[in-house]
Length: 111
Length: 116
Image (cartoon, rainbow over all chains, first blue to last red; front, side, top):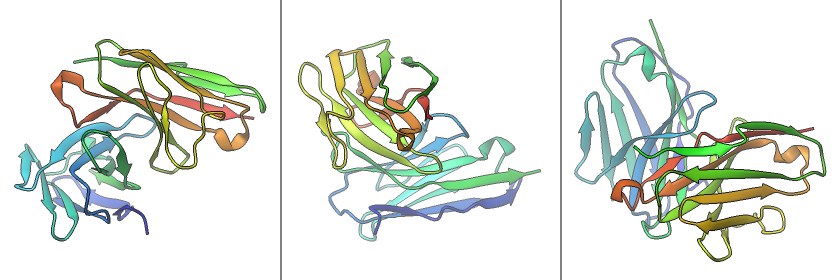
């Protein structure tokens, strides 16, 4: 079983749609959680950190459920520019910095 | 915001040769890492580049194959040695400790390596 699992998709949605991505992690010692975005042939870019209290940044909302070891990302009012691969990322410890990446979920927003 | 650069951005190499990839940050950072992203796959950590000491390698990666240097807090190199086509991949450096964010990593633009 992979340490971080995501539905690879692709998710094909129309502009303006709301889409949700889910991610599960297996190591209960995981301490930090992130969503990164990766465009084709580009490096991953940090989208947002994920906190237990949930956090929102504009159209993006991230949730963490430590008891279920589950992370989610909600994108409202999808834009064409949201088309990318979204990577769920978990860190075991802030000190060692080791990031474990999910395989990514591909989103394609269509006009 | 800080700039992370990598050189070369891409290269095509012959089997059996070695390539050294450079990663430069325009401000001092606490941690630097090297990742590999094979075609169609997600990122896998190769090693943590430790300033002034030997790198810490992840399972499946060894120093003879991927020697790493980190002479100071802004620069690191990764060498891919005795290359084979299976080494064709994107190699990315990342840094931690930018702008005081101790638990967040930012990535360089990557080096796209093709081994013939």
